[in-house]
Image 1: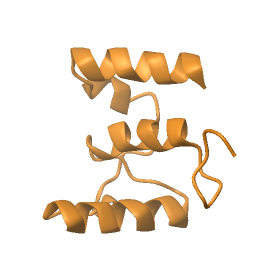
Image 2 (image 1 turned 90 degrees about the vertical axis):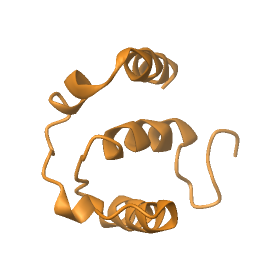
Image 3 (image 1 turned 135 degrees about the vertical axis):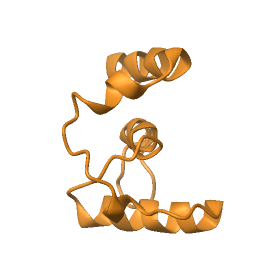
Image 4 (image 1 turned 120 degrees about the horizontal axis):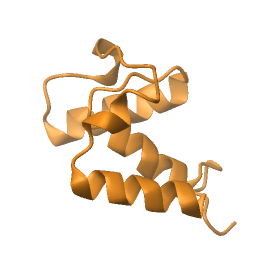
Length: 79
């Protein structure tokens, strides 16, 4: 359906998760961890989300730059 991929994942939530992943967020859901593990390997980055430790969703947005904060707010408002 509209707004979801073939696995039923929300494109908006996926974009939010990507913002978190770019700032070393760890994910509790195995499916999300696996997605970003493959994502990091594709990008040639040395770390994987499983090595990261930020689970607190309030801490990571403080690390966002101005553009990421604006995008994050837009995504939250849309969601």
